[in-house]
Image (cartoon, rainbow, N blue to C red; front, side, top):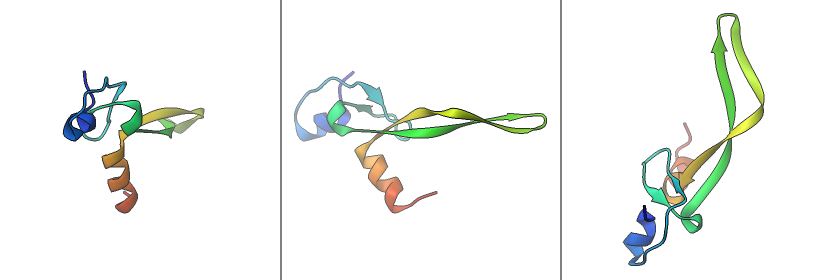
Length: 70
């Protein structure tokens, strides 16, 4: 798979991840990885993990989410 943003720029680069928001293939230059807290529900309440998971997002979605936080 190739990076979608590189394709739009007229170049070709191998994707190393897929954006969890838009699904585009992303190379290292167009990738933003961020920690994401792990939350699991159980019958007695929520269980929190001491370790964060990874969230892979393209720079377009990252910038969009920074402007319009959930």
